[in-house]
Amino acid sequence: MPTHHLAARASRRIAVIGAAALTATLAAAGTAAAHAEVEADKAQALAENVTLSFVSEAESASAGFTELRVVLPKGIDPADVKLEEAPKGWKLKTISDGYTVGGPELKAGVDAEHKIKVRQLPDAKELAFKTLETYSDGKVSRWIELPDGGEEPGQPAPVLKLKAAAPGATPVSPSPTASPTPSPTPSETAPTSPAATAQAKEKAAEEDDGSSTGLIIGGIVVALLVLGGGGWWLARRRSASSQG
Image (tube, rainbow, N blue to C red; front, side, top):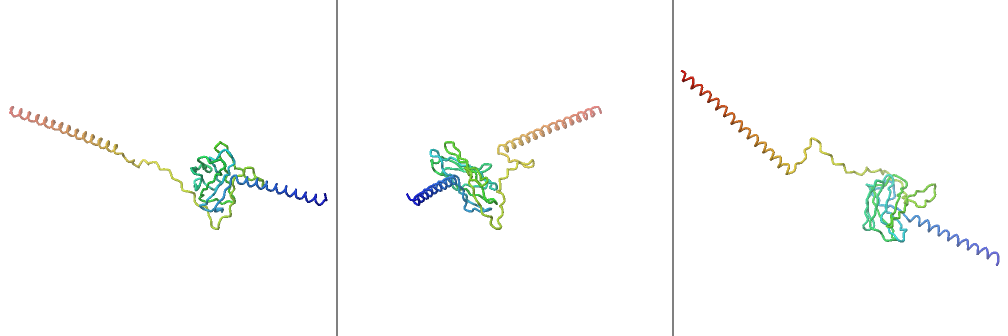
């Protein structure tokens, strides 16, 4: 076989092998990036009322998602997050470092998608949302790794890149929190119930009756003393008259 034919065949083989390798690499990269992703309708620092969309790609062929736990980056408070969309029956619950969203088991192979609204994004270049995915069989996939030294981690956390803040944009004030109910001060009087009012009236009536009884008895004693004194004076007067 002529030399140029051999060279052509070798070139074709190298091209095929290279294309296959490139396709496999791209497919692997796409699969790795699709396991857990985040997007924003306003990917800009200090943007307000931003909707974040999360997608967790199903990996198990026999179990479905039951819960996702998302660790919020610094600058986003769990109290500033509200659930906008989620699988049917799933609820959001805030925790100290983020939130969980979960509910009835999804079918195996079905991706878990949900959306939250954030009051304001922090002033940063990028935000990482570490995500833990729980399946119905108890398996947990941890997409929490961050790039280190330029190398792509095996289980990368979803990262949202932000544009610079708009001119004049400033951080909003912290969310108002419910103040605890103050305890009554000594000068404050607590409201009385009908039963307590009735008892107070009954006690007052008893005290009034006692006072009235005491006054009557006192009056009788005084009257007796007056009568006794008058009788003694009358007896002495009669005795003096008889002696005279």
